[in-house]
Length: 430
Image (cartoon, rainbow, N blue to C red):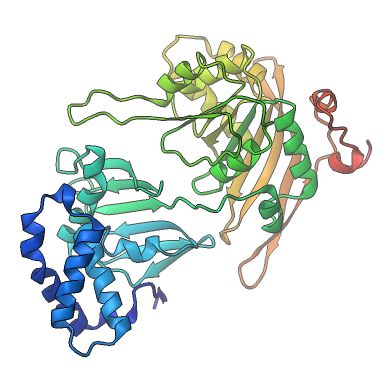
């Protein structure tokens, strides 16, 4: 039997307490109906519930009263049962697979929880509470949506008829604790030589592409790399949902806009990349390229906007260049493939690839130089590579990150920027 992770206070699982909570919510129903939804603040509803609870609770212990009050408040004006998970500081992902099955991700491991909704209608009410402030709606004609919670967490919603087993919610939590390179070193995501090389690449204004699969840590690495951008430079960031936490003062943050109910008014990543070029940026940081904006990024990198950073979903450095080709073709410029490959080879300098391993750990598995073109093929050269050597009986992946012994061709640019990296960084023979 699958072990269930306890998140909900045990007292709320008692059928008698659940029934009591229902009675409490019904007691404030007249006040709720008398006030428009826009004026039903948490403070006002909390006061109503507290007054009703005082009339009803009798000899209930304080901890029971507080748990019932918090749960009723969440159902009436919050995010319902999701709030128990949103409060957990070490939960990175929340996955609702219908009313009765809710999972979380913690420390790279996916665990089933004791969180449950009353029924699918309950899930849909919480979904409406998420999307309504954004001018969106979920129904049979609009069964999918992307949204963002007030704390910055990203939300994806899929509802019937496309979701066969009931409405699904996936939340990528916004973690307020900003990770630094020291944190990645402590987690063994990379080693000191790799960290030193990446810092040098950012300061030397190399164009860097961060790649990896879903939940491999691309945004985290992008955040860490962007922290090395000098304070004096003007940075323009472009994201679907703001996640980057740059410490510099001269930062312009741009975010895409979804279309309104009438389908108009959308602002895409591509629109923002084009606009950013008119904003006198020293650096352009794009949270993720997914389509035709890849060509705009490449052209920007090839026309003086060096030191740009972006991420891309890919299975490896070679796959990343293939995906860039495909996305560049989505721009509709009718360029021959060879011309697009030359753009990529000229624009990109470094690919940093991450992987989420089978034990849930996240590692930088490749730091790869984009060398140039050889015939009609983009030439890549691995500078660092992770090699897995085994798995412990407990399931922990064993492996080592090591240099390949190849000094990158951009070493001169690093030296000009003040980083003279010796043979101990790149391996023996230098």
